[in-house]
Image 1 (cartoon, one colour):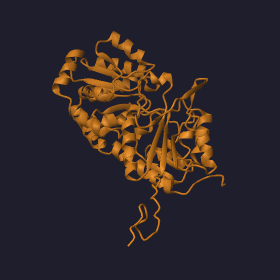
Image 2: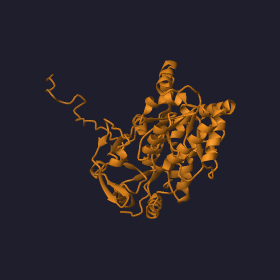
Image 3: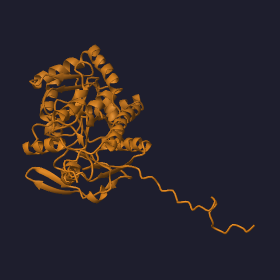
Length: 408
């Protein structure tokens, strides 16, 4: 018998074809820039989508120089970083992201609902023409009525009705999107969160010696301590808060307050701290750097705009005291008055806010009930749950038929 020729097929003479790799569907998630609290979410979402056989591409730029000074941005080694270009129109900063070539073969593009990001317009055109699918992620509208633009909000409403899918921050945001006439079945509620699990684990590592060292350094000879932690700009009402703290000190003679953060209004805190030794300006601290100060504080004071800090309050068991008004983020919906926080009426003035805080500082039983409420609320929100909801929504969006307005 003649021997088989070298390289001849083994399967009865039939030529086999090489197996082709199956292309995974690709989602492009585009940010103007990535904030510190989003880094863990992107990692969790990447892992979740990988388990679903979906490829995630994250594309991001840098914040405007005015925002960059607040030191809020981070980088992701595995993501695609591009150079943003900024254009000032009056007091507004528009941004162009040169990312069109990076999303050309994406099966779904996800952008934040921000009309100042100019990339949103050509991507929306692709959605309208049925060439690519575009999803929005956001609040449903600008939650800060003082800074919203009538034209910008009108454009948002029109575009928001016609994207392929919606990823709403929470139930409140989803209601806003439904009110625009967007189909209920194409909305995913992600329950916007931060990495509370890591926060809780790190907080447990703070020792009594750590706290004693801070007490000695700052001269804290009291337990009547409150904290402010966040950006410092007009939305946060820092002049109101500083004046309220002065009144609290009159009512609670050993009261101290810790301020963490930076921003355009940081000078308000700096001046107050220079005049009053019981006001402590700690500057910008992030993540685990803030934890000892939260553990020392009985209350978190935020009379101005409240956002994801609600979840810091829950995870670190530091009940938040705020005021009802129209400039809160959608995360205000996470708070339940007198269960895990105190939400005062919208007509509350400096003296009313100060009196409420002073009473709470001296009512250990009520404050403990709020701490218990924070613990319970902390279990309801996590990065892992958010990533799983987002991943499931992306999978549904990829499988859903197109909503193109113009058929080719």
